[in-house]
Structures are given as structure tokens and as C-alpha cells.
Image (tube, rainbow over all chains, first blue to last red; front, side, top):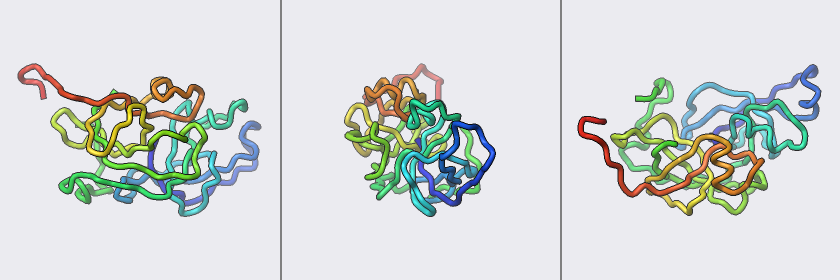
Length: 106
Length: 93
């Protein structure tokens, strides 16, 4: 799952019939230090999250499971609204990252 | 599976029912040298891990759901073990 913030909504009147009635949100992925990281994605909503809320999303096949038995063609779904974060990262790593710097696997 | 370190916990009241009763951990994947490997992720806890522990992280749905014991639920990452020690061949970094 990935941490993110809801930064917008998407409306689509013509879409797959099984998507009818689903809310679509634009989510900006975040680091635990609340810095934006990576590109914004469109997510379905399984929790009723609203604008500006911090959420966490599930990606992949599992993203359609909250809507069972309906087979919704979702690949990213908001599954939780974050109330608070208790972060204890070692000090050397905290705040050291630059969100504009593309990170790859070493 | 990835080597990772637990760096925090999330509190979420409003969440999918399958996540209830499990800790929601913030986990930082690590390289073999201990440096950060990409961004931290959110994972459900299957072994009662805590902040600071070095753990084994699965990043695929079936394995994560099986570990947590909740099939057909929206879980794509789970902490499935503690790492006590890692041995590498000489020259491997």
C-alpha cells in the first residue's frame, strides 16, 4: 500500500458499466515526511475519502476486491483514511530526501 | 520479498474491514548495504512487528493476503517475518 493525499476528483460520464457509481480521486503519493513523491494517480474510492485527506491506496488486482462481488476494473483504490502517523525514522534519513530527485533501485 | 525496516505506524479509523485488527506499518525497503531502496510503503502486519525492526516484506497480493489470513481482501503488502541475520558471500554487496 502507498501513502498519499487526495488532491482532486475525476468525473467521467461514459465509462465501463461496472464503474458506474464509483468515485474517482486524484491522489498524490507522499513520503512519510509528507513530501510529494512520484506522479499523481487516479484511484477508486472504497472509504469515502474527501479532498485534502491523507489516505493509503492499494495497487494491482487487489484494488478491485473491496467492490466484490462486482468485478470493477480498478488498479488503484483508496482503502483507508489516515488519522495520524507515528514516525520514528533514524535522524540521518529523515528530511534528507529531495522529492524532485528521481530515485531508482541501486 | 524485500528486506525492509519498520519506521512507523499509521492510525486509520476509516479503513477497509479486512485491515481491522492488524497494525498498519510504515516500512522502508532497504538495499543489502542498509541504505533506503525507493520510497517507504504501507504494509499490514502479520507477525507483530514494531518500529525499528528489520523485517521481510512481501509486495504481492496473494502472498500478503495469505500471510494476514484474509483472502479476497485489498492487501498488497505485508510484513511476514523478522530478519535476525543476513550472510553474504565474500564480494557480494
